[in-house]
Image (spheres, rainbow, N blue to C red):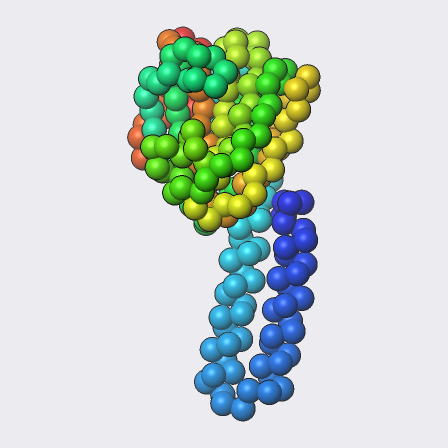
Length: 217
């Protein structure tokens, strides 16, 4: 299954792939060169297809936990000052997505969207310390039943050139449902209230809609 955000790119890539294969078969006389072009073209299509894959994951809503909004590696767990919305100290958990990860963003908790804002910006590598404040990004705040307000931020990386955000202020959202998509490499930061029990460790692999990031202590 592929994500709807990849529909146009997949169609174009498939068309280009078929065209190149036909041209290579008809106009490249050198056997090894022909095969090299065909293999490279097919590999390109496979990369596009795997990037936009959207594996089916059952929704199991639990208001006592915060789930991973994306697939990737946990790269930050620390207490920080969140300056855009809360303007106070929060627990930050960041997940880095490489180009080979599933890039669907899912809602980490159920609740009401109190804030949703897009910020244009730079395209620093996603693990850069300034990426959270200077890169292209979206900031979304969900008012949850048991955690109060939590904030998550989709951050573009060096390769990401488009962030898709489905959250709109006033919406009621369900934990695990699609919240958006980031195209080609990125990071997601989650800001939780102090005192929240964190259930992941640095460098741990997180799986969207499956890994429990935090629980209510």
